[in-house]
Amino acid sequence: MNINGSFAAAKPVCASVQHDRTVWLKGGEHKCQMPPRTPTGRIWRIVLLGAPGVGKGTQAEMLCQCLGTCHLSTGDVFRAAKSCSGSDLSPAMQNALVYMKRGDLVPDETVLDMISERLRCLNCSGGFLLDGFPRTVAQAKALEKLLDSQDIRLSAVFDYELPIEQIVARLSGRRTCAGCKSVYHVATRPPKVDDVCDHCGGKLIQREDDRPESVKVRMEAYQKSTKPLIDFYKLRGLLVTIAANGSPEEIYGRTRQLALED
Ligand code: AP5
Image 1 (cartoon, protein in one colour):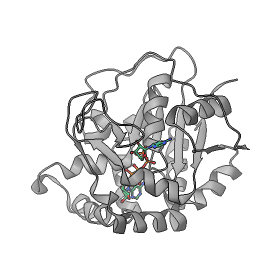
Image 2 (tube, protein in one colour):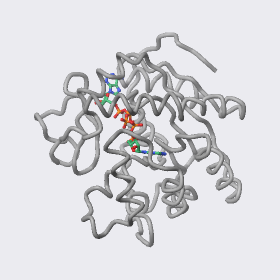
Image 3 (cartoon, protein in one colour):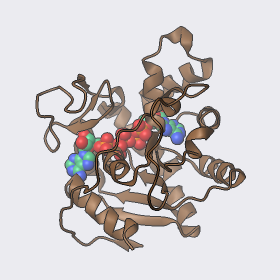
Image 4 (tube, protein in one colour):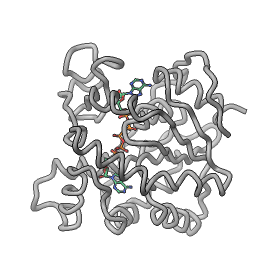
């Protein structure tokens, strides 16, 4: 499917759903304090694709509120690790943070070990929304194998598309909550109070990898390693291509129309 027409703005109409992502963010034996919402309808298992900064995290927040799925972002796991003290991190994780700071992809082996440690999240009864994984063909093949072994099927893969100049503008104005990781933009999605998160009152910060030199490396890594996943999922009949221009609400409305409504 590939539709680039314009759509009316649509706000999420679903009740706000709180998600406890402890298992995802911390892995190992950690437990989520709050059980996932019991789905009343379909259980969604979605992968988000798209260049860095296209708006995947923003859409993920809106989609998860509505679908009851948990937002499983690999970038968030690495950023959560960054706030641990160095001695609590495995050598592989310390190495991963060096790659991330440069804007390079973390080696597949490290990413796949991290996912294996969080298999419970893929089995979650509320479904899942994967953001930032898979990011290479090797990761996509490994995910396919992992899901097959658990008898889990993906519902869809959403690929968000936008010209690169607009993406760079989005990245340069991005601010992220140091506490709950909610995403803002200084011009298009400002918080109610400058530098303060609307949701948890946390401090808003600029990500280290949003510096221009890291952004360049991230875009190159996307072109070389992640873009081939479009064909990978097209071949499997799972791909939904969504134009990512317009406001977050317009893109969300487009996503619903293209992929979530019968
Ligand atoms: P990750 O955290 O996954 O970052 P990313 O893919 O680069 O994506 P971003 O989070 O930068 O952008 P986004 O598309 O979510 O956009 P957002 O919604 O924030 O990965 C970071 C790093 O971790 C990687 O570089 C790599 O090193 C490592 N890593 C992670 N996973 C890995 C893996 N599987 N393998 C290897 N390495 C891995 O929006 C951006 C801005 O635009 C915001 O300010 C937002 O408010 C604004 N905005 C959003 N939508 C709109 C709109 N419609 N109009 C105007 N502004 C908008």
